[in-house]
Length: 258
Image (tube, rainbow, N blue to C red; front, side, top):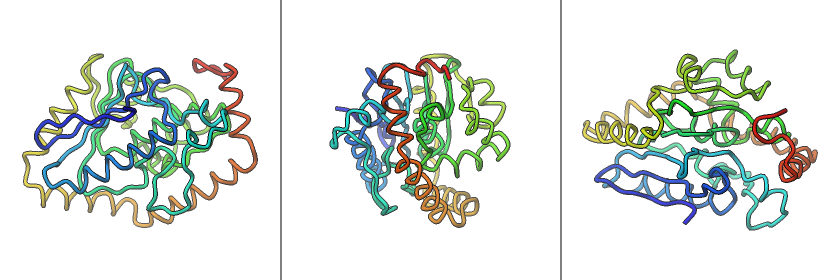
């Protein structure tokens, strides 16, 4: 399965399982992630989730090869309804429970947006973050232009958004993008340990504080998401993203080159 779930008591570890494409997300995977997190939020026995990528990478963003292929079943869903599945899956959901990102390898483009959607980010020493989709004309339409500035500040966010440069774990820690850096191979275990500890706190109080913290920062978040998506659609309609996906498919700009 493209998305798997490990359940340890009240902790769900949601695993993106497409290591052959560095866990890039196509339409099917996006829908599976969306449905999985909806189920997590509605399950009374579940308290905290961990999001992790199998095979050494968190997520390399949208599956540009799927987009370039033109296969409608593999292209990320684009819905104007903000209650629906987002291109990366769950990024329009505002869950009542916390989610922790366990980041190894690449968390770039839409993968960075997924990490920013999470409430806490644990990164391994060799992890790399960045808006790598800058190379291909693919817009941030999963909350990246909203959450990233909120997490690291506008100046640092624009550095990432405009240059597309890679940011290694230690710099990400310094700028506040990640909360903790752990040795390679330890992100999942560390995140699950934190999740277990959080799951043992009184949950009504914890979820109330979580909701208040989120909502005080994003008073008009739904409106901001809508505006981001509408601007992103203009980019997609201009054809840049499709041309960029074809360039990616041909090998241009891979391995972080511009």
